[in-house]
Length: 565
Image 1 (tube, rainbow, N blue to C red):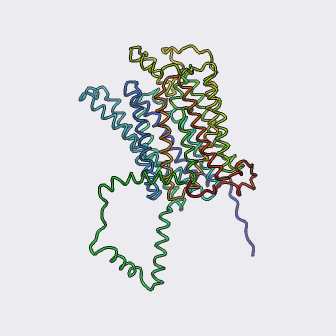
Image 2 (cartoon, rainbow, N blue to C red):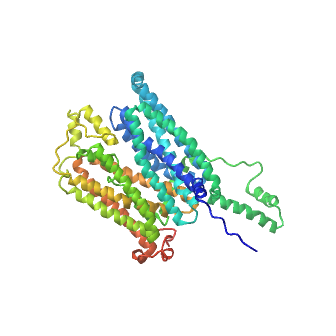
Image 3 (cartoon, rainbow, N blue to C red):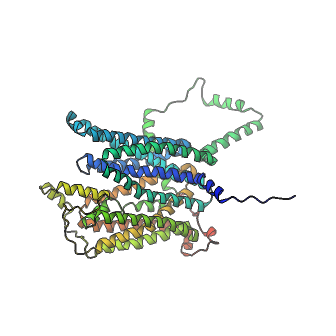
């Protein structure tokens, strides 16, 4: 009997299959979601600064509320993700997140348009109420965004990738490249809209974008769900179905029908006319606290606990392209144009790190990739430590950290034009250094050059290490605990991020920035020491052996650790 060889797909069919695959649809949905998140996170800080008279007070309050909420509710959010069907979780978090952003955008448009009248109404209390509403609703949007990130990036991606570790690594890398690109391009777009239009137009654009994006993302989620049948059943639901299938078999073996076998048990368990007892008020109040405690205990008992802690420690740093580092660069004479170029170089370095992750993982294995990435990051951060003592560094611990605050209270005010230009520079919108603000003459740019060279070069190792820990969590946390463990991981990240802001508040002057750099590098080093301990426990002396692709399966990816550390 003749057998026909399977027909090879044409190039057109392969391209069509890729663009209609679940993987590509997840990329599309993630790109839309991340683009909206990046635009909103950038714009809301600028809006709050503009509304409160060029003061950073509302922005600081918003950052504190967001960090505190995720810190306290991360475990409960993850538990909610675990206890509910995947599609319900993804759709609910998507609708809540985008709806809150739309409501915030409309509310901010009203505040910008009627701010003059609101200031005079009830001595400004209506305006204050609007500020509280904006911060509260924006915080709910961030919590929903956290739930979306957990369910899509930490769960759906794992199921769509299937059992192939290489496919999972490629999907994680692609998702991270999308993050890098949107982190640069989205703020640029909304910044130009606000610069050439107005803040009112910016609010309207973001609200309209989230409305359209919500509809498209909803359809994409539904399509991915239909194309991937494994998403329909979670681990807990599988166990319930198996029990239901086993129960009738056992009943038939005993010669009873399922109804007959269950009736005596029901009679013994509960009296006639008994109704299920509703949980009391105290139980309802204590349940989130119990979930919080259970989540942290479960996180501690994971075999990847040290790896997760090592990632969290990397958040305790000022060596990133946030408002702190860019603000310090501005005090050292770098203008907005140079800063934008440096941010672009940082994004390129991050993309190189994601590409390097996939290549090194194939050659050396997942755990060794984290060790190599961490070592590379630490070596690059040595340049940042050297910059503290290089010519041109303002490092001087004899200067009081609050000297500038004292001068400000004594009446030496910065010109309003200069203050506004400084805020533009911090937002990355300024193209030249503002002439109204006279900077002290610099003897050398060597210090700030070494600082940013180290920060940019370290992004390669940083993003590769981040992807390593992310995949370790994905592969080693059981399916029924993915949500709560990743929720606690987010809480840990926010906790260390919050501590780094507190550290800056205690030493805000440029002369103390060198001390912050040294502390940051120390925390990064401690994080990588934790990972080294995890890697050595997993692989032992094999950690230092170079493995060929043929040996990789025997020496790699699944750490042989007990369930508790």
